[in-house]
Image (cartoon, rainbow, N blue to C red; front, side, top):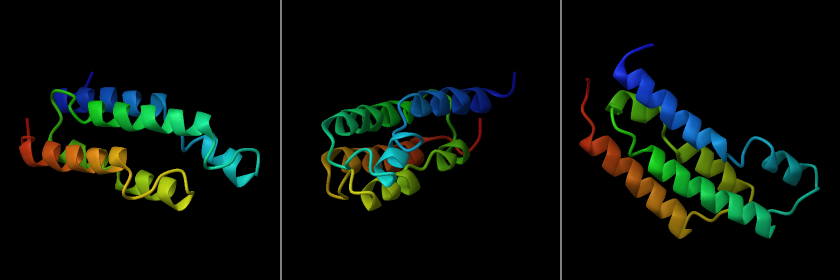
Length: 109
């Protein structure tokens, strides 16, 4: 079944992926079927930010596994698409939660 770290990482990825707006919704923006300011997209994105922050608190994550969960690249895509701004409170909170999780996580289990 894997190490505790691998199991924790799998749980965190599953939680993040469940409401990930990047997979389908950004494609809809690129195709012109949805606007980046759409209220539904905003609600999904807000929910995803919260789920991501919660996933970073998954018990058993090490610094190594947390680095695999770095939200920065995904946030950059959302900012570039105009869905979020870099000053959005949820973006700031997620970045802070990530930095805090990495700082407090064990190097290895």
